[in-house]
Image (cartoon, rainbow, N blue to C red; front, side, top):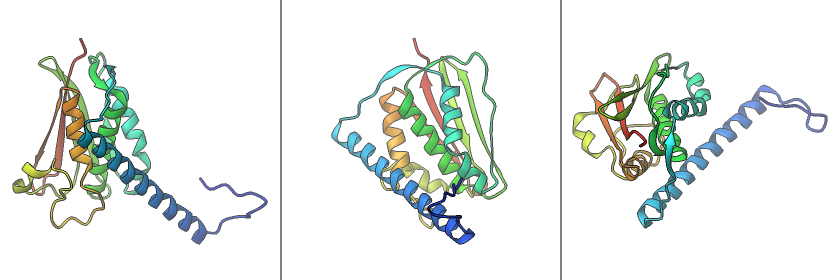
Length: 200
């Protein structure tokens, strides 16, 4: 990952660790900035969607790849087996990828080390369902009604975040004509469910 050259010389382990820490901080700042820009679009009504026929398997594969390094850091395995002949969905590909990537990122952050995250996509009732299930502590049922509220974070959580990702996801999914739900129990992890219409 780190390239040495004749001008800087080789990086020692401490320097490599520092560079990695800086990169993680930068990625976190970029993610936060992106979320703030997205929520400002939502709040001002300037959200522009490019609705088209989207292969949800490609969306999920891209989202998994975006989070592969984060998963490896916690020795988490992401299980996803694409179904053949899954119908194309009506969605904005870029925003759909952002949403699924955000759900996968959350699942990794809230899952225990050396566990698995299960992702499924299937057709039912002329819709395509995407499920992302983590292996974390779960969410107290009393907080579930607020989980998609702006700036809401489950009390007592020590994970970083703006409390905007799920709120943005909900706004974008609904703007595509779909919906997003959550099922969770303490000690059983959480499962987020996206429903999108088949492209006609």
